[in-house]
Length: 141
Ligand SMILES: [Zn+2]
Image (cartoon, rainbow, N blue to C red; front, side, top):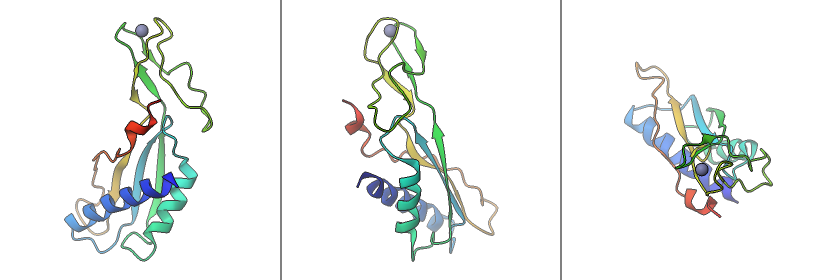
């Protein structure tokens, strides 16, 4: 189950952040999730809540922010990939509508913590953008 693996990685990172801040618990985590990943946001939320049980993040609120896919081509075109249909069943391939070249996603494949909120600290809204895209390569067809 893919979401579970991702959730474990995200939780590990969140716990590292909590430790760096000597926090005894995590109040909230925010995850940036690209719409061009194969990760289902609701599944990911459930998995995060599951793996967080009995950890410092047991009571944490999970916020998942979906990122709209965006691609850029060497010919100068950039925008939302035309083959992306916004459903989990579609494998989004970024293909340039101008010249047909396969292009790279510049947005939409991220899956990382964007914030970890810990209590009673001046850094309570720590921004942490450590990329946790361990399996990103496997999304490329
Ligand atoms: Zn192009």
